Image (cartoon, rainbow, N blue to C red; front, side):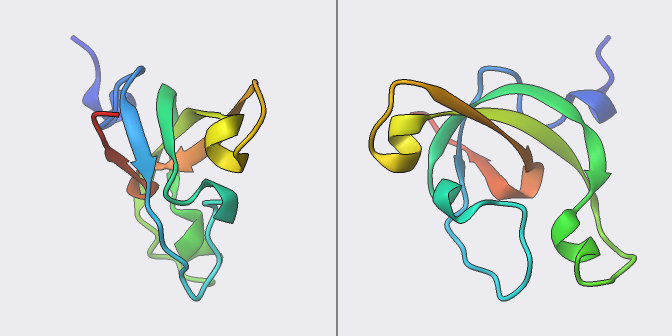
Length: 97
């Protein structure tokens, strides 16, 4: 039986969209990838949320990090290649697209 603590909320192949937000603090979600659709490649393990750690706080929630593949065309409006970003689970929500 798979270990849920390693597997995470999103399975490989899941279609996701990143949150469209502009927090007043550091975030590891690049501006060019906000509100964009991608596909989960694989979960990469758990880590403290960098957004909270960058504020000098020790109470960062530990979240699954996912490799997420985006079409360059989705990110920048052109290009025939793909880009893979490592993103925290709280940056993502599932979508049917």
